[in-house]
Length: 175
Image 1 (tube, rainbow, N blue to C red):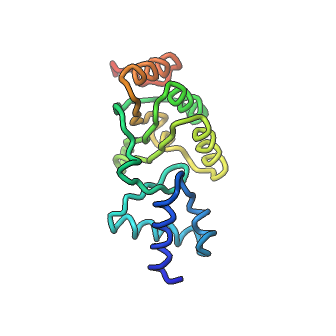
Image 2: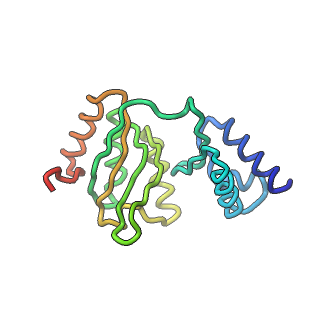
């Protein structure tokens, strides 16, 4: 398979997938290294293919898959050990956690797509962090980070935000 054929195959694979596919799984399917897949994804994105790299794997964002609802950005603070608790509070309140953003004092803004909507995805995300020995973005900013959250109503967002406040995970709005 040529490189162009491989990228075409990867694109078809992503377009037909019902859930994210890890780079490792793609590399096994096409018989190349994970690093080659990273390069392929960069080339596909450069051709304006709507591919997102999430904590669960790569996804192709068709128009029907765009999340709908009311969006809000919240400022949070906690230690790395509280990440699962924070994410579970959000998903337990019917909230979709779209992304996480930190503002690094030297490099500026870093944003990562999370796309987490249930406890199973939280568990998978935490397992991935632990098994890869990767750092959470919040570790770059001493625990302070932003989340874009999405829900079907303002009430759900308000309830989730209130629960985060009760857990001590919200940055004080007076700061």
